[in-house]
Length: 188
Picture 1 (cartoon, rainbow, N blue to C red):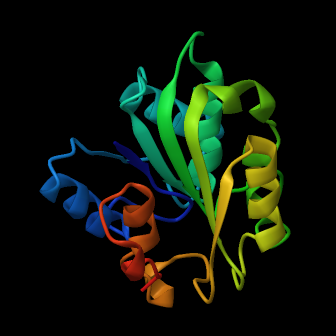
Picture 2: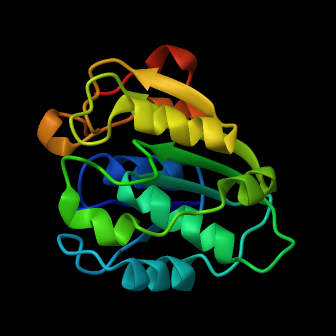
Picture 3: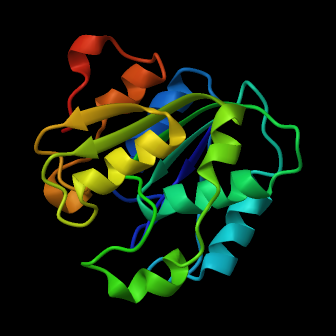
């Protein structure tokens, strides 16, 4: 299992430590990828970091990525030598394209990913989004899900799933990964 954070974050932020600890408690080998310069990300350097961590995938591999980390993961998957198969991916507040509220990321986001080419290689595809995300519009996450032919999961009032918004656990991810019963699947 790989966990990939997003812009302005580290592996110690938001719900990433909670998920790491939960997975570890269930006996899952977890790598939380530390991306360089999270406040001034370079697409090249982030790709290099994810590539170093995720050097190969198989049907037993899952990736959970948040926001800008999702695009980085998708670019890494697109660069893998074929054939490959990934067990599953969960993109939390994932998107492609530019964001009106963060024009500073336009250069990072300029390169598109051929999602139609990689989607069939990801056995299970999930996109989690919120109805009140002020950073990634819900329509951008839904568009990503459509392009990946992924299952969408709406969390009402989840914002951008940030610690500053009170989100330090994300039980829906545990539910998708089959680590928790459905009744606990709400953002906290």
